Length: 143
Image (cartoon, rainbow, N blue to C red; front, side):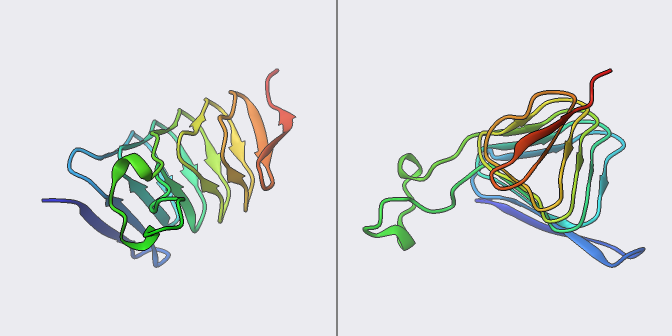
């Protein structure tokens, strides 16, 4: 099988989460005690969500650009060397607000908060609140 596409519906609040792998060997890993209010996760390589993470409605987590950035032949270009991809890792005890987007290559370290509508394109250190587009540190949660 080339890829997997799963849509999970939660009857309690009628939200859904789409889980999709794009290539053989691509992985989506979800830890224990996680809460998901709908959204999508797409992996060309690997998207890992560790333990005790929560995310609001319509959060998107992707490890790929989906298409080549080179304009010539972009629509039908399936060459992985020309389509950007890098694993995503979201560590333990992270809360992600509604409509946030986590892009390829991002590592979100423990105990943080990603604000609603944030676009996270770079790593996030532990124990901080980030928000905005692009996401920036707004508050230190440590001690």
